[in-house]
Length: 86
View 1: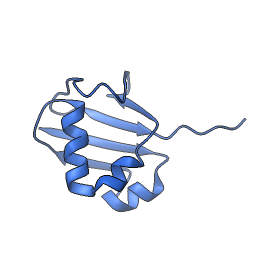
View 2: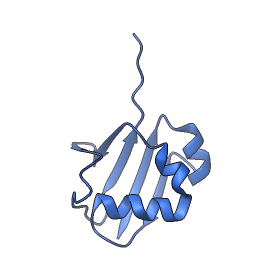
View 3: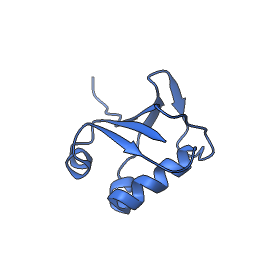
View 4: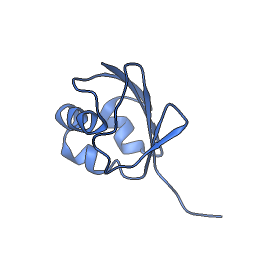
């Protein structure tokens, strides 16, 4: 299954994975499967730093702990680093 990963506010991770947007081929069909595949390809430290919010196709929020959340071929998963300020 092909998933597009988009990173917003993670410059260190962008360098590790090769950019702000990466097309990723994965096995499995859930958010948990995606995290496992990302960890396998990029290492546990990279995944450990992907804290913040997760958005599917620009309109559905995924709870980080919902590892059984179903994904579909062609989905875009955006990891958003939340920043404070005003």
